[in-house]
Length: 177
Image (cartoon, rainbow, N blue to C red; front, side, top):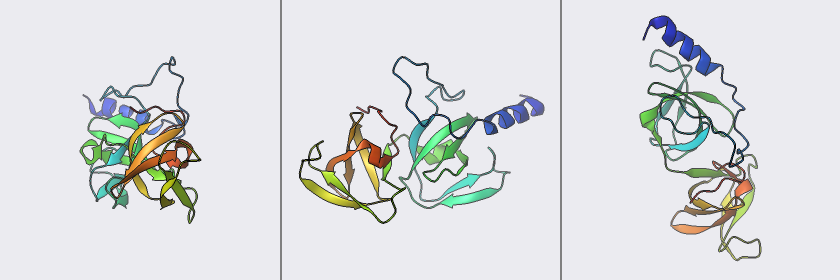
């Protein structure tokens, strides 16, 4: 691949709007696919390592703008270029990471936009169900499955259900089996 074509692809990938894909598409709507992986874009994944460099562009020659230090943290892939993935975190910051530092394991942050608040993890998918744990905003949970309104999650050996709209790492109305 020529240097100019490679540069054009990088510039095109950088131009993809960061806000694309916040709302889940209807089941019959066409899904954007990554040009490298063929997987849906955008999509949620998690960080595989407790040290992940976020770079300005898709190569090790680009400046590191941030270092993530929390394995399991959910991030959203918004673009692909060769072995690099452009990701966005829960605060809206984005940059490029090597794909080998990402995992398909689904995790979510409990209501990161509600700092200092506490949220109930329930025994069943119902507001009337018993509370099995109280989780602080920003806690990372493993996502087991989602119905579109509730997700079964696990954290520190406990399982329970949380309202899907209280989680960052799953899309509104997304179903996960």
